[in-house]
Every structure is written in structure tokens, then in C-alpha cells.
Image (cartoon, rainbow, N blue to C red; front, side):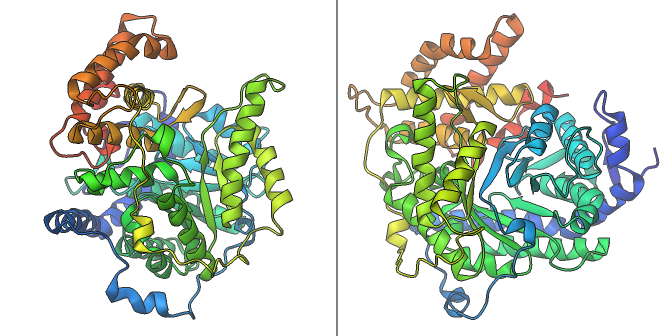
Length: 538
């Protein structure tokens, strides 16, 4: 294969030679190299600014605020984002956490009646080399109409492509001696091979942007969009992106984020677990930000989360942007007439009705069987393709509202649940899987983040259990992990020495993470650089 100056690429993963040669042609590789060379220093600067912001908050005990130096943007009532294309105007129900590596599930999603598919290289995906190449190739095949018995891309649900976040790197490609940023590897190849077709078919290119923490990061994405559109000969504004507001810091800069992406905005999205975990990430060492048991006390009816969603809807609709809610992770039982089936349907309906009443224009589900009932819910409760007409002008959300921690303690059930989710997520990554099923719902990196974050925080503060006044300590977590071992083995159907060993390695890695002196900012970053993960997937 022809080499590109300054680029080192690992050979194709086993069985993926055709996919590799289709995607990483000399021309595509040169395009990627140019993209990385142009923006690599900017991405490094963004990551340095994140560290500096954290140091600034820690050193003075500071709190985020609505930025004084950007008040002119918030106070200017005249600007709005550009209207979204026809196929984005109705976003009622998207399928979430659809890793395109899972060919069978991806094809089912393409055949579904969902409005869109969160085509995921982030929370619901594990970024092994095999998974990246297979996932990118499956998207290529979908866009180029190469899957049998699948609607053409202009008739299928729209692909909401989610590249990796800034914190992730691609180990298998070096440009000028440096591993390339994961999001540029994903975004660059997605645009190079699919951007023009998606645009011509009025079906994209549309993206989700994960873990954006500031308007400066949105500005960088906007610069990347402009550069790529010019390189590929696409009109400026062809790319549309929904920014996931997953950080407490970003909540204070939502208008500025929309402002930076005016020509390219498809709105903002709110999701409960990454957002909640960001409180521990930024302030977890402070007693005043002790987050109680998520299984009992953390939900969208609590002031800090309700205020976040209300402000997101108000901000978006004020600026003509779509506001979307999070993903329903619950799974419907197979027995449709059962009491459990009715219970799950009722629970999802209740939670999604809260979001509809707040004014969201759409949300996500994981279970394909929830698409139809949730679309029906939107049809019954709303008028038109979206709720942009609901402006929520009566709202007055303050910084205090956004930073108000819910009351409540820690239960033994909640502690054990968090331990189980954290260990099973790491075990899934060691198998090259980005999500798994546990106690009736799908779990991914977002739920793993809040789970391991809470265990770390509860150990740090010696939090007492409501059940029996025991303190949460490293020793207690080790004991409970031993108690959970049988259940976790049953969940994973561990029948071989190899599978039991992998679970033991995952358990040890989890214990290492939750007792770190300094809080690891992202679980996925930690795992992506960890020897056990790297060696397991080579």
C-alpha cells in the first residue's frame, strides 16, 4: 500500500483488509493527515485550558458562573442559529447507543421507524482498532446503499454520527510522530467518504459532539467544520451538529456554544448521567458537592437536573435551535402482556413525559420496541414536528439552582449497584464491547462514569450508609465486590477460566480507579491508555 509522508498506520485488523483498503486510501489518509496537522495544536490547547480551568476552580474554591465577558452575546436578542434542514425538523425519537460495529443491531436500526440513529463511536462503543474500522465501514456501506434489504439513506432514519470526544486518542495512526486525536480520525473519515452523498441526499452530514466543556471548544469544532467543507467542496453550513451538554461548566455557556456554531447547529442535548458525573469530576473533593445515591435520589425531578433541562430548552428555543433529551435505558421484557412489561412501559412513559412537558423536541430510546409507543406519546402530547414555539420565557434559572445538590444519603443497594456497573463496564471493554445489559437496562460509559465517580467520592468523604451507619471505605468496597462476584459471573455467564480471569482483572482495575488520590477525569481515557485494555485488544 502506498505510504503517505509523515503518517504511520498499523496494518489492518484481522479479517478487515477490504474495509481498511476502502477507508484508508492514500487520498483519504492524506486528507486525515492534513486535518490533524492543521488542528492538532488547537486540540492540545483546548485540553490545557481544561486543566487550567480546573486548577483555577480548585485553588480558589471557585464555582462556575455565567461569563461576564460574553454577556453581550446573551443580551443580544437578535441572533438565531440557521434553520435546520427538512429531515432534522422532526427529531421525536432517536435510537441511542447504536455502535455501528454491531452490524446486526445497526441494520435493525436502519430498518426501524425511528427519526434518527445515534451512530455511536463514544459512550456506547469500545474504540478498539477492529471496532473503529468495522464501524466506519458499516456506515460507508449504509450511505453507499450496500446493505441488502435496507432502505436507501434518503429513506432510512437519519444518521446522527457521534465521533469520539476530545479526550480520546487513536493509537493506530501517528501523524508527525504523534498519536492522532480520536475525534479527528472518526470525523475525518466519516466526512471524506460520506459527506457529499449525505448532503446530496438531504440526509446529512449530521453529528453529535460529546463532552464539550466551553464555547471555545465549540469554536474549534466550527473551525474544523469550515476547513473540511472547503476541502471537500461542500457549502458552508452543510454540516449540522448537536452538542451534548454533559458538563456543569458547559451549562453556563450554552448560549455562547450556540453562537459559535450558528451556521452548523442542530441544537443541544441533555443527558443525566455524564452531566451528574461532571459534578464529581469538577468538585467531587468538596464536601458540599457530595452526590447522593443515584439509584434513589438522582432524577430529572431534582432541582439541579430540572433547572439544567429547563435552561437548555429555554436557551435553544430562544435561539431557534432544537432541544433534545436523554436516552431511556430501560429494556422491555419479551413477554408483552406481563406485569413487568407494563411496569417498564409506564416508567419510561412517565420519565419521557417530564421531558415533553419541559418542551424538548425529541429524545432517545435504546430498545427498538420503545420507538412506536414513544412516537405515539409525542403525537398525543405535542403539535407539529417540534416544540420550538414553546419559549419558556417565564423561567428564571439561577446559578444557585444549577449547583444545588439533591438531599439524600447512600444505600447499600446503590453502592453495590455502582460497583457492579463499574466492574461490568471495564470487563466489557476488555472484550471490545462498549455497552452491556444489567438488571433490565443498558449500561454504557455514561452510567459507568457516574457509578465509579460516586464510589470514589463516597470513599473520599467516608460517607455513611443509610442502612447500618457503616462508612464507605476501600475495605468495604473490596468486601462488597467479593459478595457480588457470583452475580457478576452469572450475568456474564462465566464458564471458562479465561472469562473468570477477565472479570478478576476488571475488578482489580475498578478498585485501582476508585481509590486513586486524584480523580481520573474520564474512565474511558484511563482505560484507553491502560495496559490491560491495550494488550487485550491487540
